[in-house]
Length: 113
Length: 114
Image (tube, rainbow over all chains, first blue to last red; front, side, top):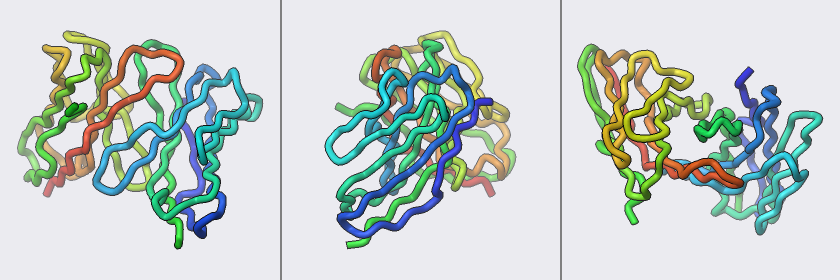
């Protein structure tokens, strides 16, 4: 199975709150898990990424938590800001030397001021 | 730096017409990709290329063709447009895979087939 399942489809958070987006995968060959951020009218841009040799990666207010046994990973946005309002995609890839990404369905985040 | 440039930004096609979506990158990346984005469906890989002269099918290749004659350019061809091809198309490029491999996306082409 090549699917990556993402939830929720949409999320509304108050300014200063924590936004949490979850993803699950089935293919155990996946070994690279990036998150992309997309603003309206723009292409996706890499936000943060992790490989399964670590369980957590933090960059500023953004943290990926990774659970290899459960085949799940999540994005946590601490102290969410209105500027974080965007669509977020999780993705997965294997080391087949092609860089092909399998994307989740996307989560539209709205941070209310 | 221009990065990944896609043209046109918008296009309306009639059923049965053909067109080419242009994509060029100036980062000397070997890998290039075409994705389509539909509401609630995420991005689906149409075709990809690991270098000049080499292309391969992705998840949803039917109705599309590609070529890769140079490192910089990766055009996507629609031969007989169908309403099901109404979508936003993104071209992307990336360097060879490594610890963290970033795919750089263009701004997209919004295509409507009527």
